[in-house]
Image (cartoon, rainbow, N blue to C red; front, side, top):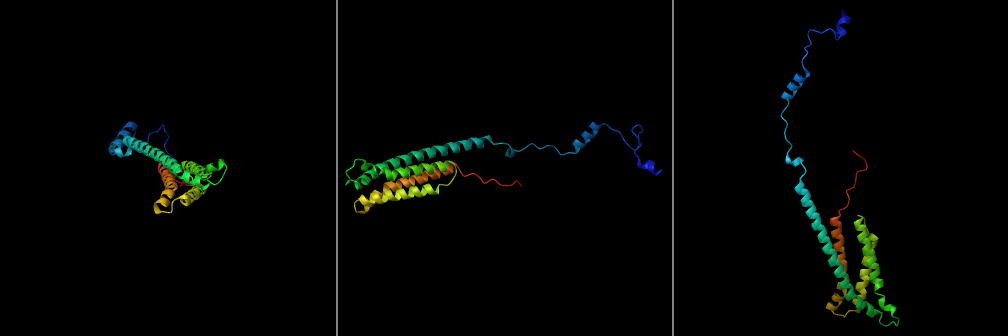
Length: 192
């Protein structure tokens, strides 16, 4: 008797306590008890206006950087033109014609280091060594121009201004590029 109670009935036999109903009716009853489906709010959808706004901001940012680069180029060229003559006057006692081109020894390394800085900024890296070169040769240009200037306040300021203005404009250009291309977020080493 005890084993008969433990063993379930066979499929051919139908127990009297089991009620066979249609599975679709059960599904209908279950879904009727569920709360109604809410439609997703606008917050969960992608905002196409935000993408347009972001694209306009990026375009405006790139346009400003291009304009800043143009101004930096103009200031650097005009500063070099103003500072070139005093630097040439330093070597006026030499007889060789090639010695008049020696200011390129000051502005050549400055230009190469500036291009190196721009390259490293575009690759989102630091350029400490190149900044030191730019500062060193800017200081050399300022000292040599001031040495040839009149010993008046305006003469010294006028002689130092081209190299300092070029350096300041170049620094601002680098800052603009950094803002246009922010540094990458550090990725976690391990997934959590």
